[in-house]
Amino acid sequence: MSGAPRDPFYSSPFGPFYRRHAPSAAQPQYRIHELNKRLQSRTEDCDILWWDAFCTEFFEDDAALTLSFCLEDGPKTYTIGRALIPRFFSTLYEGGVYELFFELKHTKESFNSSAITVDCHQCTMITQHGKPTFTKTAG
Image (cartoon, rainbow, N blue to C red; front, side, top):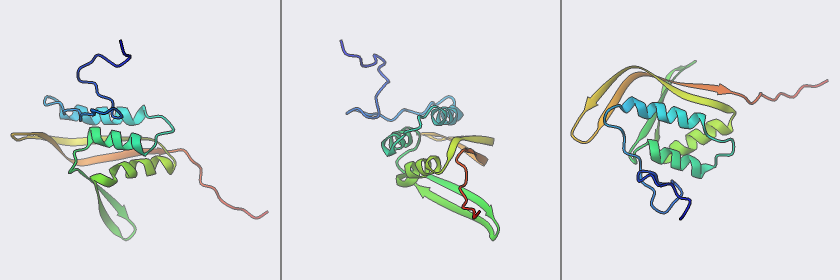
């Protein structure tokens, strides 16, 4: 008998038959909870393959991640396509982020024939940074 899990819905993202997890029809916000949980339980040595598997599980092939910032010269909005989302997350962690999670406020669920979507006009990405900023001093 092999050591593979017996769960019929389990499929390793690194195996030959990886399947995308189907989103829960009952609680779409639970997927955000699972995404946050997965980010918290990641190991320190995650490579780009891990991030690709992570994004395959939580983002559709046509997904986009839109970020809005209020900078000194006014508000800026950037949209990251699905192909670059794994690199976005890995770059954050490589740059010193050790904790990241999303907090949704004022959500609204929309139903159509093939999917349930959660619209959220206030989603906050909260990060904790651990790497110190190195400075050069003359002494």
